Image 1: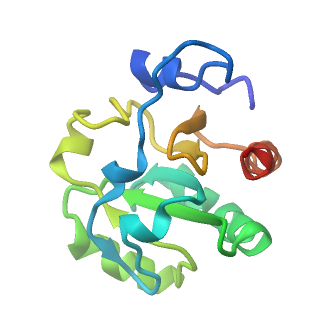
Image 2 (image 1 turned 90 degrees about the vertical axis):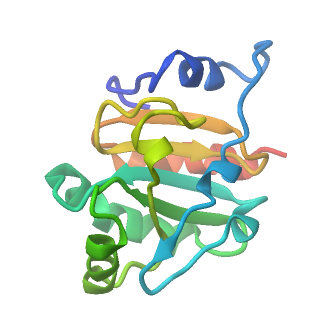
Image 3 (image 1 turned 135 degrees about the vertical axis):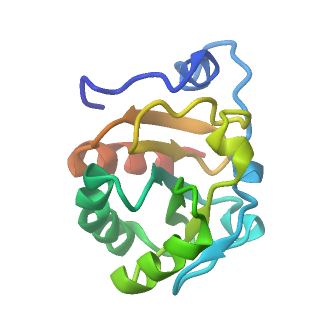
Length: 167
């Protein structure tokens, strides 16, 4: 990943350790049991067993908006039964602003509404100090990579391909 790759918290830093490391990595898919808005809806059950790119964003975050075309392109390139991009909207107004946002951009992937525990850093995702923050989650529901700030599409594509190739 790019030099800006970093830890979301001490727990997530450990969660993204080398595959052979003796670290307990949290299962993150259950934490995505959130309200889904926009043209494409998702349930946690539909996300299990997939490689996920999860990006924490907000409608007021210009770098987050700048990344949208890359996420759309990645969804088109890798989309199918084994891969999904998922956005998690951190806006305090929740669905009231995220629903029209998702409809306006015609997002081809789910947009979930963050709840208070995620915004407060009391979830397996830890504290999200920077928006956007992007995670790659493997088919096993565990984190494979994390980046704070804007992620380069080529870097993210490499991480997706690694996660898709993993058993």
